Length: 233
View (cartoon, rainbow, N blue to C red):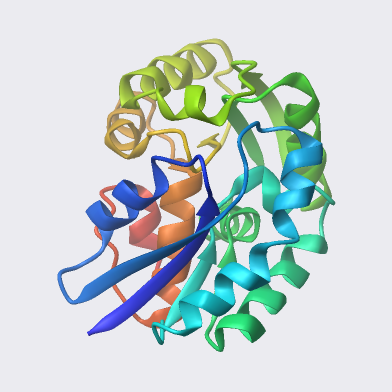
């Protein structure tokens, strides 16, 4: 039995169900929480300070791998902070660790993406940070669209239909893009990804899909993700 863990924002209601839905039967999934109510730069910064404590608690369950399941929380200080975060969590949990921002970059690179369009639930300030992070990692962000939400519980109330509609709106207006990335581990997305891929014939990934894929790769597990990303492994 493989045990996988994640540290998640305390107000996140989506990451755990989407992880459970994508993991094979021989895996168990365990989460620890870090305090966060509003998705703002200040709260995300403060939340990261609690990551090692949460990871160390998961080490008590002898997890085989761990994820920092928060997109903007792992990119808030730009490229480099994400890798350091992975190292800190790996040390604290005594297990391989991935951070969502790094996982997204790895997924886009696995798909040979140069130009990416982005859908988010965030405010313009966080969209700007995300654009900067992706640009620092060598991607051209051809479009980024945010819903302007601050309360994380409000983000968690969005469903896969919301994600599909937002993605369709973006891709209908920005045809020259290599992939669509739907950001935020609290944004329910998994049921929308395959439909968007089929309609627009480009890869579509989300924060949770990329994180699950990356963590499973690190631990030798095959994730149940019905998207093109799994074909590049």
